[in-house]
Image 1: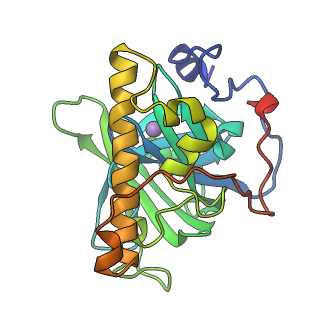
Image 2 (image 1 turned 30 degrees about the vertical axis):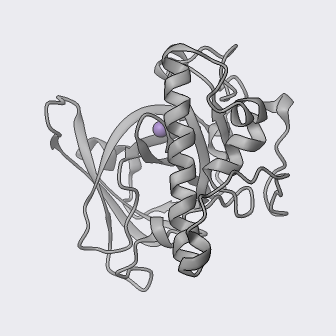
Amino acid sequence: MPLDEYRKKRDFTKTPEPSGDGAARAGDGPRYFCVQKHLASHLHYDLRLEHDGVLLSWAVPKGPSLDPRDKRLAMQTEDHPFDYGSFEGVIPEGYGAGVVMLWDYGTWTPESPDVDAALKKGDLKFRLDGYKLKGSWAIIRTRGYGDSSKPSWLLIKHKDEWAGPIDITTFAPLSVKTRDADFADILAADTPALWHSNPPAKTGDTGRLFQRIIAAALAMRGDRDAAATPPAESAAAPAPRPRARKTAPATKKRTGASR
Ligand code: MN
């Protein structure tokens, strides 16, 4: 079963992530893709491509680059259920504990004629049509990275009209699901108790992890505010600014029950 590994790693009584029990999406329509920015023990970006009812997944530590000279390491991870692709929120404990932001989504089109054969060969070419990522890309398998015996892949932008020397992760750091939300907003909206009782009430490893995650979320907001405001104003320490979440009209509204 393609989702066995996904389910084995998670306790669905403790995580808001979808269990994958929902029906896989049938269809010949456009294939969905997303990139979820995941602030866990380490910040990374999860690229997911819909194929055969599940989301093929790679963790990209530095995130995608629009510069064809950059080869971004991408570690393949377990297939995820299709409905994971719209998930944004806080994973309070366990595998992947941290904050997930829906950083980009849209549709993808294979440029390799046979996706399964291309994956087996380790060279998949495809087009993305998202809000941030567009045009032609390749993901290419290499030998293992570091000590890992698992194969790693490289995510590379092809030269086209959507390529350029832009650090898209810095240029467009925020959520495409919840307008202008950063990690701090998602934390504050999803876990107000955790946010306002910094340090969090939880003790032990999870508590320490979340103290680090909250500090990292505030530091990222601080960096962004410093870049956007004159020096005199940026001298003030960044403060949490919890607020109601605004959902972009084009996206599905979050409902607690469906997660
Ligand atoms: Mn992840």
